[in-house]
Length: 78
Image 1 (cartoon, one colour):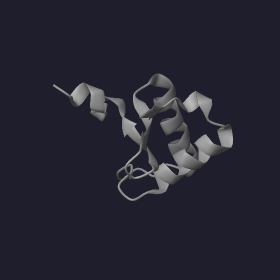
Image 2 (tube, helix red, strand yellow):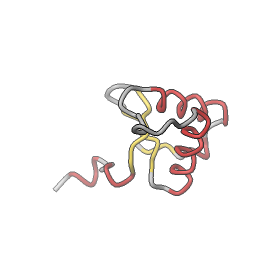
Image 3 (cartoon, one colour):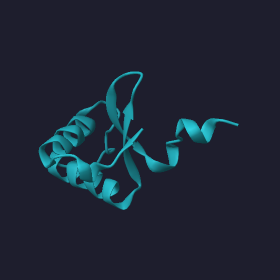
Image 4 (spheres, one colour):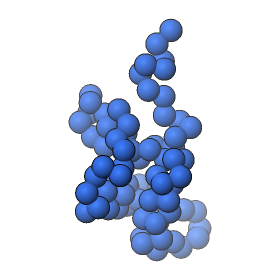
């Protein structure tokens, strides 16, 4: 389920984004990028719609995914 990021309190969205950028596997290559820059980049991607906040009912977690990689269950059904 997609969560409209604009409906979350700023503090909640900031915590979700910060948790996301601090996870392993979200490295930015050999270039040093500050935490605040990473957070700004993810926030911009959410605003542009190139990234989405997605809630997993199965795992009861929220994740940030590239929009082009997200397929809702209803789109998967034949």
